Length: 136
Image (cartoon, rainbow, N blue to C red):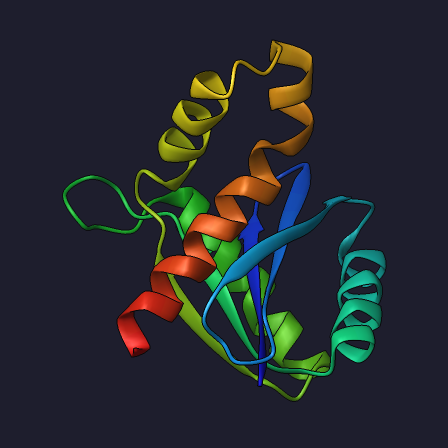
């Protein structure tokens, strides 16, 4: 059972995939957003390639747990995604995943330009791993 993890942003979508047993998450790509139809087309290709059964999307909540403007954008994107891909989509609280991803990359001593290129993919990995850890 493969599960896809998404970190949906305004300019990019970080993408991670679980191993076949659903135990570990691995970042696979960052999609540069080119419009919702193109974005979903890319995700459809990834879902077919990895035989994905479920999608976990990060939901960017405010620190007090409320939903803000970015949350509404992500929910809107996922609503459209549901109409195009007939898979279950789970919304996962992504508070501090980008911070954790940045911290991990700093500890790995990656340059700012390298961090900028992979932060969304790493954040998607944290989102998916958090979900995987919660179900086992």
